[in-house]
Length: 205
Ligand SMILES: Nc1ncnc2c1ncn2[C@@H]1O[C@H](COP(=O)(O)OP(=O)(O)O)[C@@H](O)[C@H]1O
Ligand SMILES: [Mg+2]
Image (cartoon, rainbow, N blue to C red; front, side):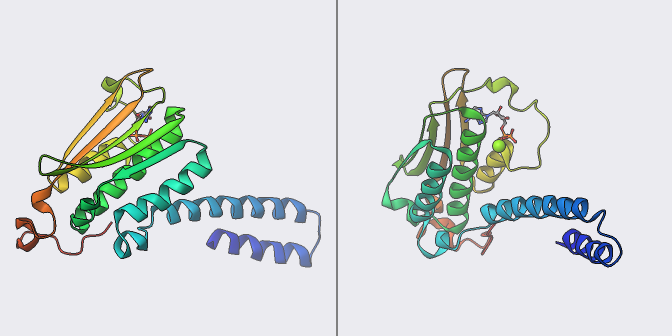
């Protein structure tokens, strides 16, 4: 925005003198506006949706996946057990962020037709799997790529580790990709960890 403001000041000056360079200045300002719009969209996407706190994980995922399906043309399906809403705020955020990043990866890399998010209760834990029927990849190469400042697969794992969950990626070329997150239900509302002094309180990212 500061950049645009500086450009506008230059434009004003140019307009007062000669109009020769005006077209060029306007074109580069337009580029700057387009670039800023892209950045703002990215920020908006990364903002924590209010619906996650107000209505819960299932409505938040529903909203995200509906837009995702419309934008990418990938057929998405969400199936979730109601118990998932019992997990506390930190775990809820982790599940939401992992699903969001996994779906973003599907849109970016997988060339998939379908993406399924399934949330089940399994052996006293909440288990979320995100599956696609895309091109898959060689898992061995996962951690050798260029370092990225995005959330990424490493970031997903770190987030899951922070709530003492379990994270696995399963993929092979031509075989699609499955991401699985398991969050212990001991951390669920009413569980032991809820009153623990170690709990981080209102951590929301
Ligand atoms: N669902 C997927 N289908 C195909 N390839 C994937 C998928 N998810 C991740 N990958 C591969 O793993 C790599 C690492 O992903 P990630 O850590 O999210 O980094 P980034 O998305 O920034 O490249 C990707 O570059 C891509 O090659
Ligand atoms: Mg990624």
